[in-house]
Image (tube, rainbow, N blue to C red; front, side, top):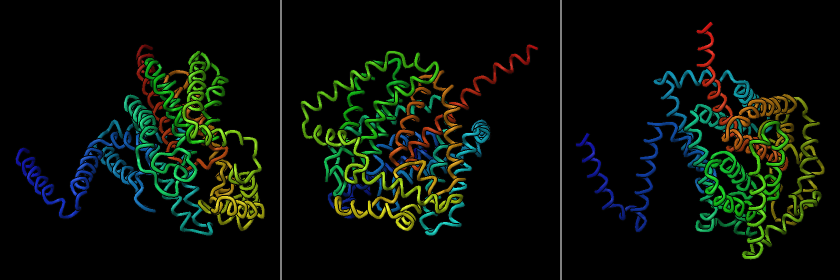
Length: 460
């Protein structure tokens, strides 16, 4: 072992000495990055749970990890984690037993059925290449859900802590990292670190905030109060109307769940007071950020405007037109854009408006999760998706009533549902982290109850 370490040190030292010949002035930094990547890869292969932690913590920085149209750091992390998990399943009997129990949960089976139906849509999709790409992406998301679902509770806590502190760190980092050309932060001033989409980023930060404030940091209120302004500023600076709505409405909706109101208690009031104070400070001290954000928030009522809502009302009508033309099977995964322009006159008008206003083509998504699933996967896909929602909330409500982490995850699910009203979120990684977390807590609770049942059976 010592001989191998000495040999490795000699090789690394030699490579460092000659790194400038291959990479110029940046040679040592490139070498350091390669060595770090190798070390992380080896660590993940030895411990798959580290991969789960890194996948969650990388979500706020995901756009920075893309290296072109196909390659990305997230895909590399995911692949290494899946390989490590597969190897662990072959050697760890307890993990394998937990894996089999996971697939007995109705939620896991519902997600599997949804992904299989989505993959089957390749057969009737007009653009089979796009449908194939969508199927591969959803298989990866299914794998992400399984990885999170197999975590024990203590590791699940670490995953959510990593995501929360990563989201908080991304706010100041967003102003230190280079801003890619053509992103909304570069063109319109809307905040999004590393080129992240402001809407999706704001909702990820909102989910991380609720998980930290109401779940992870319930016993460390001072830390929660110190981090809360960072989260609120990040959401406000994005100018995301959906993000702001989720931040304000989510705790109020959760109060309607029996027994959850007592768990949330008076922590909601300090949250709103703190959020209002942070907003006032931003308006008074950072007028450039306040002008962009308030300019967007004041247009919430202008639903028909193509400029302020990116033609969402027209896109929604287009989704209904596409669904009417293919009600049972849908047009296939990822085929909404082509089908919308082919079957809907309203979307053509919206597309021409957007091209005049923003000099861009209309987005190839329905901007609504339910409508997107309906139009692409038909009535069958819609039933499967609604089944996922049913099983998710049926499992999440009792979990939220019992634990602080469950409360934070439940609030995150509400944020995801609000996001699905104006965004296409059935393919967002954070959603499958939430689903996997519900499964993990389900398995934890069932394992905790099992010993007590065995004791009662032995007594009688």
